[in-house]
Length: 464
Image (cartoon, rainbow, N blue to C red; front, side, top):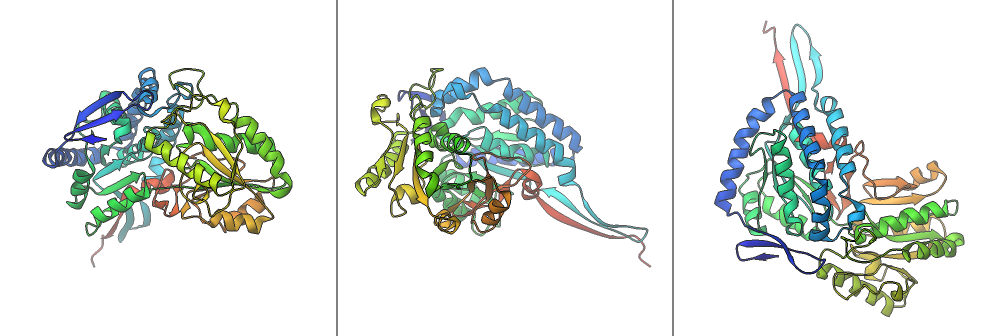
């Protein structure tokens, strides 16, 4: 995506250049970050209610841009305009984080007597680097930007080239809302310059959402700097449909979670295990749902499945699917229903049966509109298969028994256990993962804690 000193966003819709921007050099970026750091001190000194109000004003200003951002996203990464900009969840999460800020950032008072004041306060890291992904360019970035600013940090945003304009939009919205200039800074950086800035210790905290390889590169760049890291990396999230599940609800939710955004969701469902007595019925319902998707130009209101963001992403899904079919899997979705599949970015959805964990499509991240479905005999078999993964972001359990779901959840290596829902971020709960999915967590009170550091005060008033 980077050509010489220029970043170019190539549209998956028709291969055209949506936008191009010059890269910042390391020196230019370092000076801008230094200015952000200077402004951060004054920002952190402002009363919390002022910071909250300005951040909420920035979110409102961004929401007012939806007439521009929705078609812009369709051009940049292929999301159908019928899906909107997903701004409502942005506003909901921002409102929630604003609402809990006072409690989450309040000092922990151990003693306030005539002799001693002992307390633990939360102090901002300084400048937080947010490296945001293209698949949910506003949601994922603002999950960190909002609490980081509220907590008193400055923020540097490096957005993905595929959604080149999203970072500019965010910076513009917050600046127009009255945030001090330079406090939220969007920079166009290549990987080498970013790694150099990290290695030089320019940041107090780094949040990255992206690939496992990208997470490793950031860890390597930060080695020896003692910079705090939050990493949300790959996923291969499973669904488990038990014999007592509501099959209509399970099929509808899991198919949406597998196919929404052309399957390009970190917490999308990529593998499904179904209690053997309900397997055939579940598969039938799922095939009927997926067959109704309409693949096409994302700017068409009738389109429900747009192109993948890049041809290389589609090629990976095609390769995984072809390998599975060659190894004995069976494809259930008729290609005749999706003549728009052009062998390029436009990729039809697919469901596979007769799959097993020897196939890449059941083990490696697909990040596309394909899911494998397997019958299982009992919870122990399902548990072993769900845990048989390098990743651990979410699990979707379908049963009418919350005790059974909770018991399974305690044995699952995952960040979030869902029961009778999937692919949802509750801002009151920590969004986190384990294994190769990464470390750290955003949202909730814990999100505020990760974006600040504890500072202890032991004040002896009576020295006698």
